[in-house]
Every structure is written in structure tokens, then in C-alpha cells.
Image 1: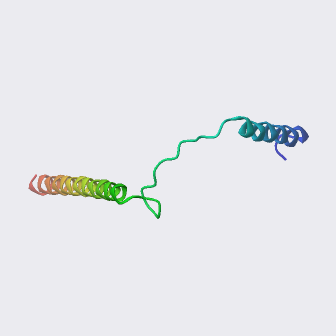
Image 2: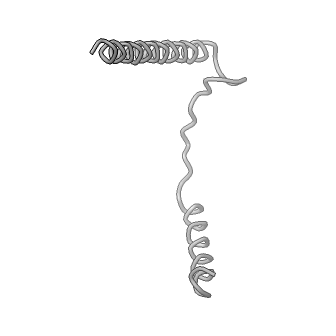
Length: 84
């Protein structure tokens, strides 16, 4: 048992306090536009698709560069190791 008998009592009180805070705080009225699904407009879907494609291309380029860098370092190490 962690915390003894007072633990459950204080946790119940904390839950009640947090629950009542949720009722006091104003709810957000800002509704963002849907970028996918039934409520999205065609232009937003196009923009989201383009951003996704750009991100994929960027990640592919980074991965390719890193692979070539690792390969060249490995090859350099092997040449140095066997020629010395």
C-alpha cells in the first residue's frame, strides 16, 4: 500500500478539484478546418497532400545522404586499415 490511508482520501479530493475546474474553465470555441475526411474542402486536401509529399521527399533525401556518408566512411576505414 503506497501512501497509507490518507493517500486515497487526498487523491479523491484532487480528482474532485480537477473535475470542478473543468466545469469552470471556458470551452474553446475555435474550430479548425478539417484537412481530411468528409468535411474538408478540395484545396485543403491538396495542400495537405503537397506538404506530405514534400516531407517524404525531404526525409528520403536525408536518409540517402546519411547512407552514402556512412558507406563512404566505412570504405575509407577499410582502405586505411588494409593499406597500412
